[in-house]
Image (cartoon, rainbow, N blue to C red; front, top):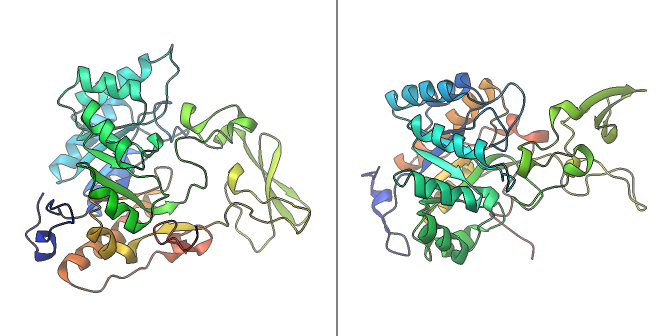
Length: 345
């Protein structure tokens, strides 16, 4: 939808008219979807209750019937629904992924988020009218790759990996004719998106193939003296003192010992990406959609984050100050701009 606000009438550097910034929100359950819609989501992204999506956790996701009902609710309330079918099937076992694409189309979803080139080929040929988005799992971060997916499979939007600065995104938008969606809030992946297999060394299950990073079935918490220890398949991932919150045991974000110091976070201390104060710069760069991470999060989390982003985006277009009030929901109560404002080489 083209916004008639003056800021949205400006032209981007490639002379494409800017549309009003879209808030894309997570929903791990039908109840969370209703909360996201009622809190002001422009679009909600979900997944099926199987290994076709990268958040394949027990108790989450949608059956085909639940999805169809939820799409009806969202459309009746002015929101869109995207379905993530963004894991990579084995070459000899694609039926589940093909069926999930068919089920998403039958449910009248507004877009299907895909990463695998074979699935993109299947969807674009069997369902030529379906709107296709390129998942961050495809790791497409340059014009050559994005234009290939657009010309070959008709992809209309790309979810960019969290590795580009805002100036790099602006330059990229001048070289492609595809909408760009960027991650705006939530956990910050420290691995190369779409290429992570680290947790599979411990659990045998890859987030890119099985849809689970540190699957819950392998997670344990144990008391050892005064400490709480988090384990993944009998491997100690982290130790927490009484005054610390015991985080989820994700291998790449565990605490490690080196020869030089005590156990520390070698990859990244617990922190959350938060771009809410960068909305003006992101709009100027030609970004069309802000993606909030967290399909495994609670309804309360979804409500508060969506309401804050709804208020921030509306304030921007109304010419008012943007309020950043999400520090309490950040991992470790710490926020980061990630690579968007990169100060290193």
